Image (cartoon, rainbow, N blue to C red; front, side, top):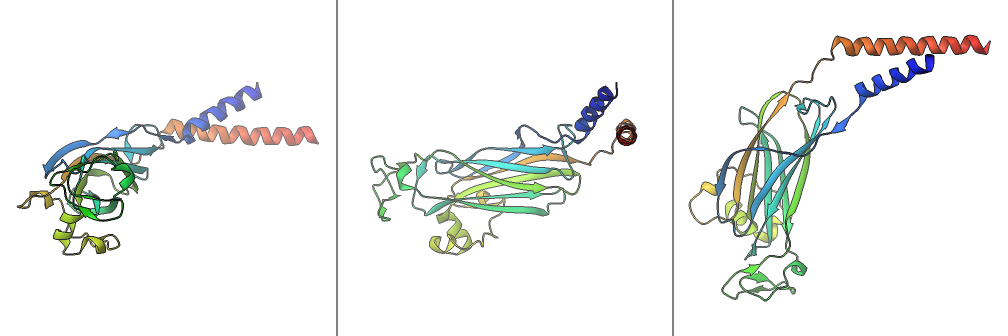
Amino acid sequence: MLKGIKLIFKVGIGCVAAVGLAQANTLTPVSTVYGDTSWQNIGGTSYTFTDTNHNGQINVGEKVTFTVDMQKTYWGIHAFDALKVWIDNSSGTNLSINQFRWNFDPTHNNETATGWYVSPTGQWVNNDSWKPWKGGDQLFSFDYTFTTAGSYDLVASVMCSADLSGLTGISQTALETNNDWSKWNENFHSLPGWKQGETDRYQFTVVASPVPEPQTYAMMLAGLGLMGFTARRRKSMDI
């Protein structure tokens, strides 16, 4: 009988303490501003999170992993592709800013030359057209843990290093080691002139960490009592 009670206690405590990883969720799109998405675009954005109480919602204190899928079709006259992702709260304050580069790989781009592209020897070549990109999608991820409940936006934006150079006034070569992307904001793809890529805004909600129900406390106290009883029983049997 005692073994049966101990088993029930272990299962109960296991249910209280279990930590799971919620399945990937697609963020709710709010707006998209397009440039020329032939070169690079955002294929999708999702998130997973440590669902400590298995309620299917992001709670304060649970680590969230955001993933952005960056796509491209052609390779042009630039050194790398760039992705910038940031999280805004309801007042528009940036809480987290992440910057990623996708460097050129000639082994993925070995079709017949058709357009501006980088040759395996590093030379710019112009064939008056575009060269297809064969590198596939690129996934970029970062983690963030929220400390306050509320509504949040995630903004993801992609462009090439040539446009980023024009925006920042820093050469493409210098940008490979310089992280001054502060002028890159959500309005970039709304600026006049031809701009590559796109900017997407998504929305999601973080809820307050739930207070354990009275039944949970009762189960934990009962378990502790059973543990104490078992320890005393074993001690008396050993004497």
